[in-house]
Image (cartoon, rainbow, N blue to C red; front, side, top):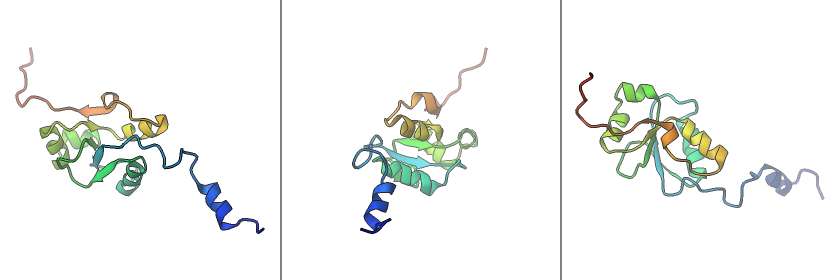
Length: 124
């Protein structure tokens, strides 16, 4: 038997997650926008690893936009489209928190914005 055989290395590198990983992003498709702390590719891999879908633009299939408050303030194309379609817009902490908890968490604590009425109420 050889020390450091390919199979023992593969075993050592295998994640400690249950077989197939925890698929808590199942049935969700995410889009990303803005300058985030990780690359788009890293987030795409993370989302797919946990069963989610990934889109490069905000389409009808997207359930959640991960972005920054600046993207919403500056009305980026993706943020504007998500708002117009009532798609939840969350900060990137949402993804990390779900991974840490090993389950899908409610969007509420991570919402940057939700759809608002087109007219603004007058300030008193």
